[in-house]
Image (cartoon, rainbow, N blue to C red):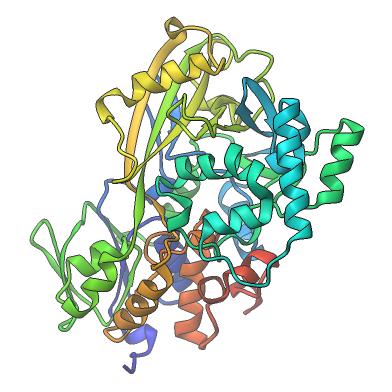
Length: 471
């Protein structure tokens, strides 16, 4: 299909999250103004939005932090918030066996009970001595081969089920890249011998967070920087007539387009379209929902939490897989830092891991007490619960095949599906990746340049690729 020149095309953008706003910002940056962003909610931000509850506590949709693989993204963040950033050194932990273990777990097995530590070390040694050249069949097999039986059984398998809400045997492993620390056996052994904690690994060991307004403040400001009328709120897609290039919204209005940049979940987009030939591929995609539970507390965090950022929970005696000490990110996340503090928990849900929505807040508070994060329920002064039906785009075994059919199939109608759930690539679905998917798509349409983030995730995650800043 031959596309019209962008400055002469009718451009519609579905979704005012990081990807849609990134595309709109880049269009405007290039002097292209013939676009409209349609957002179903009453605010911009998508899954990166923030909310203030009735007690004055600020909450994000999960434990978002700002770190980046792109100079373009960093420059934009600087322009949007200026000096209104707080900078943090990541302090992440694992809570299991009634103790805190520094993250990454595999580097710190010395903190386990002695017999479990030996079991994990034996498994690591066996992995190094018995390398296989045959590719793993799935994520579970990759875990066993990479970390051995001990770490797989005690941490990796139970934790990843809690996160993904699907058994690791049903997931692929190619997405991993920088997400999981690889094994350095010599380093682990010397950590044991020297009695040393090893917590510095990771691309996000340094991060920043907005001084006020939570993560959503970033995207509110980017939305506000666009021309008046560029975003229409409260515009949810009812159906898509792809062949005639027309969107119908739930309020009865319509929009014709030459080019459609869609950031809504691609499974929903196809389901609401006339493209019956793509619906079998869309049905193969798997996802999990995410429950975010905010707990506002009186007093101050105990000494064991004063400097912690977030904590992972692999054991099944608590419902959440991660808890963020959210008041540590910014004192303005609570109404008065002298009197209050806050924790934010995440619970995954899928057909294979159901969640009792009516009880999840109560279960979360009980779990926090059981894990020693809070002393008693009487300290709770506010609770907040948000369910994101599309929480994690699951990197299932059939994902790449499905996306390989969906994205090119949609492009045949001038529809470009991008973003966390638009492209369904978890490995490039952080805020920086998502914004850059929008930016790089516009660069492709204008300059013919490659979309590195979408097409080469490992490269996007290993260096700072050339982006619009170089144009």
